[in-house]
Structure formats: C-alpha cells, structure tokens
Amino acid sequence: MPIRFRVLSFWAMAILPLLISSCYPFQRDITQILTPAAPPPVEEAAEPAEPEMVTLVATVNVNALRVRQAANAESPIIAGLLKNDVITVIGRTDEDSWLKVEVPDVGTIGWIWAEDVSLDGDAAALPVPEDGKIAAELEDATQDAVAEEQADDGEMAADEEKTDDEAMGIADLEPSLTVHSQEVLKGQVTVAEAVVPVEGWVVIHADDAGSFGPIIGQAHLEPGVTTDLAIDIVVDAATETLYAMLHTDGGVFDVFEFPGTDMPVVKDGAPISPAFTVTFTEMSISDEQEDAEEAVPVTTPTDAPLLEVGDVTTHLAIVTTRALRVRSKPETIAEVLAGVAVGEAYPVAGFSSDEHWVAIFFPNIEDPVWIAASLVELRDIELRVEMGRATIETGQGGRLRLRGGPSLEAPIVGFVTDGETYNTLGYSEDGEWALLVGTGAEGATWASISFLLFQ
Image (tube, rainbow, N blue to C red):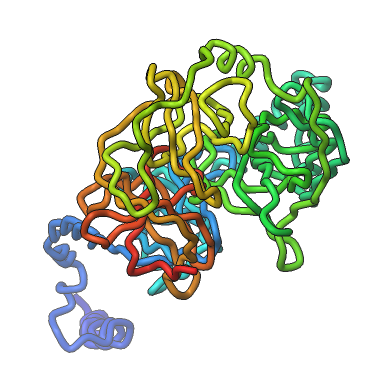
C-alpha cells in the first residue's frame, strides 16, 4: 500500500471518533443510546373509595310545605310539613333546586322545594342520587321529545305549546274569592268565583261576634278559575253572616286538614275571607237531614232527672250525621236552638223515656238540650261537666296536639294553634285535661290544661 494512502487512512480513523463525539455529547458508552429503556412497572388501579354518607338538617320556613314523590311540581303529594318542622336531608338534584328528605312520623322519603327550608350546612355537600340526576335532566329530555314531535306532527306540537301556555297562565293567577248575599238552598251556599294557582279549598265559617266562627262546610278547588261552586254546609250551625275563606291544600291531596297543613291563604297580612249574608227558608234544609229527622218519633221528656253542670257524666255523644239539629225538647216539633256537625262530641246529661232522644250539654246554653239518639254514637267516659271558653297558649305561634282521650297515651286526633279560642265542656277526673268542641277534628278532642288560658 502506498505510504500516502496509509497516512490519509490514519488521519481518517483519528478524526472519525471526534466527529461522532461532537454529534453525541454523552459521557458514557455510545451504544447505550441505542438500547431502549425498560418501561416503568404498571401499578394496579386502586378501587375508588366508598363515598361518605352526608346528611343535613333542614327547618321548614313556610306555613305548609308539600312533600312530593319525585323532584318536580307535577309529582304526586305524599306528605305535608308545617312551619318549623325539622327534617333530615339526604340528597339533592344537580341544580340544588330540590332536596331529598326523610319525612318524620310518616316513614317515607320524598322531595321538597329547596327555597322553602333553611339548611344547617352547604347543600353542595349532599350527594346527588340517581333520581336527582334524572330530575335535573328531565327538562332537557322533555324539550328534545317536543322537538321530535314537532318534526313528526306540527299540530300535536301546537297543542302542547298551548297547554304549556295555559299552565303558565294558571301559575300566575292571583288568589281571590267572590261571593254574594244569597238564600241557603238544600243545605248549600254558592261561591260565585274562586281563583287559585294550585289546589286549595273554599271553607265556610259561621260568624262568632263579628269574627270567624266554627267551620260549617268546605269544598276542594282545582287550579284555575272555578265559578258557581256549591258547598254543603251545616244549616243549623249557620249564622246570618258567613265567611268564605281560601285555604291551601298543603297536606294529603283532597283531604281537608285544618287545624293542620291546609292553612288559610294570606294576602296583605290577612286571610282572603269575604263576608256574605244568607237567608233561610223551608228550602234551606237538605233532603238528607230532613229525612233523618222525620224518622225520629215524637216522644215525651224523661221522668228521670238530668245531670247538671258540675256533675260527672259517663257518656259522650258523637254525632254521626253531616248535620244534626239541637232542640229544646225531645220531639221533632220542638224549637231548633242550634246545629251540630259530624264528628263533634258532647257530654250526655240523660235520655228520654223511650231512649229515642239524648240530652246533651251544649256551649252557651245553661240547661241540657236534645238530639236524636239514632244519629249519634255513645262512648264511655268519665267527665266532670264544666262550661267555658279557653284560648290556646303554646307560645311563638306553635301548635298544640289534640288527643282522643285524657292521656298522653291517647292517639293524636288533630291540632290547634296558638291564640285560637274554643268552647270547653268539661275536665278529666284528674283535672289535667279539658274537652274542647268546634276544633274541626272528629270525635272527642282533649287538650292539656297546661296550654289553655280560661276566660
């Protein structure tokens, strides 16, 4: 090999490593860059932790709150709550407008409107159950369905749009009542017009010294405008002036619950309750009441002495007919003194000789009066008869439980509200309980005297 060629080869071999090192500035063996690195070990994915159950406590802020089966205003009502009731909240919808709650004393779970309660914490901490997600997505799904129907059938879509517009119009209605002076016909009065945005009641009150007296009739209202609404009343308990009062239907649908969840509708600080006058004729009594009284035979007063105020009676008479006349003597031709309503309870003073008539103690009438025995149910009781009036004093507008007997073990049959006044007919033998009348609850209604202010 020529010397010149060997020299060039030597320099080429000397320069080549330098060129390679300038392109790859590694301090290690250059072969390491050609060996792929081992991938990192794959870690097994950890199972998600079980979400912690979060609950809050809510206090009802409105007079009557409906608990619905699902989180939308069209869902059936399954329970009712009153102001200051405390409930446990276990969930919410995505947009926080509805809360899922456990209803006390009922043993059920339902949904309430979130704005009607106060929470003891942040609603965002509550879980969103599947039915809450469904409720939040319901509006979008409905809109999609309407769009499809519009593409398939324009007429049907137009009808649905009209229905939506009508529903929105009903929701914007201002509650009102219009009633005129009238004659009572066949046990009924008529309300000319009733306007409500949701379900409600028209309740007829008798007059009591220029204010609202006992309830003598009621009728259910559907949302919207109702005209010429006929309402059955207890004619014998009616006064020349009556009051038509608007109530909510805040508890069990189509069941009148007052005292209870079906509270009066208040506008400008007062209930909507126009007064009207009525007149009575031979046509005022309903056929049902007339037939019932004609079936009671004429008899003569009993020879046995009747009980007096202060004595202890062993019977209560529970009225079983819708309306029953109270008479001065045990005969159908005797003067009518008053009327009693179904479910009311009165202490028994005695019986007629043939037991067709029952003598009872009646508020504001000194001597015992008479009612037909076939239209009442007798119940055993020990009651010291004392007539009077008492005002409910629970404090801070609270409610007082009424019980079916003079004991804390007796069932709860209704409620009365702080400040209301009722007639009392007597006391339990231990003096701890008073028998009230005119509360609207059926049967004997006992209240603890600790919460009564006697007049």
